[in-house]
Length: 120
Image (cartoon, rainbow, N blue to C red; front, side):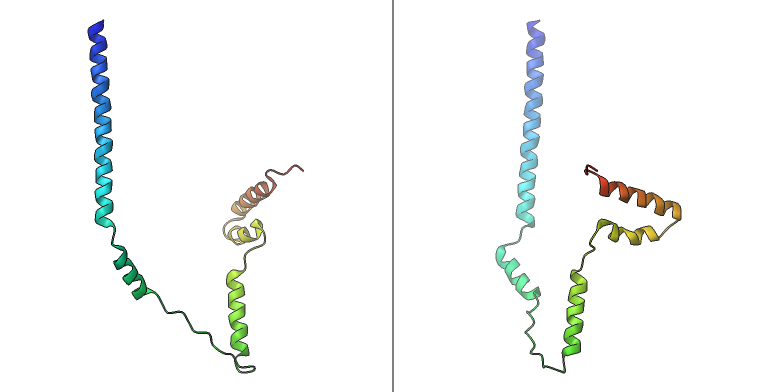
């Protein structure tokens, strides 16, 4: 009985030793990979300054000549920042494509999602 207990304890110690040895080996491999793949900060700063675009200078607008261009720029900026007001509004385009069976199923899913968590 005592011999079986010693053998089990030896197997446990050897197994745990192998596990921790593999963890340390993997840790060493990760440290080595980080050192090999990281670039020095000076190279990164030089590369970023070379690839960054210069900031555009503000342009003075005249009262009459650039009004259409200004209006167009404002319209584009508004269109890019506009978001749908509801979840259903953004999904209506996906519902319109496909069969009526698919559209009905999607409409039911959307209707269930909007009512979740509400006590009506």
